[in-house]
Amino acid sequence: MTLGVLLLGFAVYAIFEGASSLFAAIRGWSYREDRWVLVLEAVAGIGVGILTLHRPGITAFVLIFFIAVWALATGVLRIVESIRLRGSGRAWLAIGGVASIIFAGLVLFRPLAGALAMTKLIGIFALVLGATDIISAFTLRGGRHLDRSGAWRPAEPRPA
Image (tube, rainbow, N blue to C red):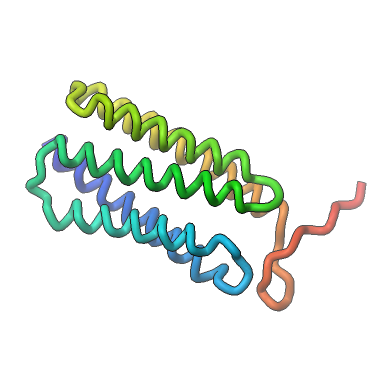
């Protein structure tokens, strides 16, 4: 039963993460130079999530492999996006990418680790990635705003 809940939770999370990346790519299509990175991240998330839901009878080993491959792809794409991003918030995006790659490495090199250890590792990864995403979002949102045309531009400095 625990594996089923983990499977469903991961699938929903991956699809939601992919959909939010796709939304960000579509929303920023006219002004973002790195939209292709977001589209790739969306395809990876939605694809792995749908594949996980489509094959619910997969073994724990394959599920862990799906999670590791998704984390590796997401980590690399986040680092690429942080390099291409200008302004504040780059560091938190890169930290999230590095955390994803470290998590993927740990899972890929020790795929048969105990189920309890794996659930703790997934929980820690989810907390770190979620925290870096939230901090990155607030940092990026605070440093830019929309002008009347809907394009992002740097915020004007606040008076002292």
